Structures are given as structure tokens and as C-alpha cells.
Amino acid sequence: MTAQIETIRDDFSFLDDWEDRYRYVIDLGNGLAPFPEEFRDGAHKVPGCVSQVWLHASRGEGVDPVIEFVGDSDAHIVRGLVAIMIAFYSGRRASEIAGADAEGLLRDLGLDEHLTPQRANGLRSMIGRIRQEADRALAQPAS
Image (cartoon, rainbow, N blue to C red):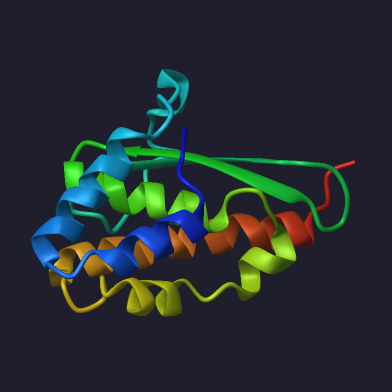
């Protein structure tokens, strides 16, 4: 089961050492739900990531639907970052996702200063894809 974002924030606040945070991020990735094989394709792959990252969104009904995300990566630390983004964004309304400050979350967790440039770029690509899904849901409501 994916951890809740407030639990992640609380846990990070107790971890002083970057090595402990790094292990915790990997543990979060290990807790991700299995990613459906049918979504392990080019349409669900997030471009701009050095590691392979897949993301699938499913949305509810209405003009401002709740969007649920599942994701995966072939790299341990990136899989943990996917877990953090899913905990942050999944289960929110599209309008909330569009306005959510993921960069602020990363600063709060201290991750912004410890990610390699490649991982940071990949994470920005993932955030961009998530926001794109929210924008699409707002522009084309499901009936």
C-alpha cells in the first residue's frame, strides 16, 4: 500500500542523515502496488527520465474529477520518488493537482538538494505528466 503524504513528511522529519532518507525513499518504492503489465508501454512511459518510468492515470466522473495514479520504475531510488509523487497527487481532484506545489514538497523533504541533475529532470518530467493529466481532465470532462 502506498504511504500517505503526511506520513512521509512526518517520517522525513525524523531522519537527519541523507543515507537514512535515501533508504526510506527506496522502502517507499518497495511499497508501491504492482504496476499492471498492460500499462508498461510507450504511451505510459514518462519521457525525460534516464530510468524507465511508467505512469497511468484513471479519473472519476465530472468536471473536476478525482484522479488516481499508479506508477513504476526500473530503478530503486526513482521508484521511491514515484511513490512520493503518487502519495502527493493520487486521489486529488484535477483542480487540486493543477495547483499543488510538488517543488515545495521536495524542498520540505530535503530532496531537492540531494537529487542528481538527471533524477531532478526526470522528476520534473513526471510532475509535468501528472499535471498534464489533470489539465486534460479539466478540459475534457468524463461523463
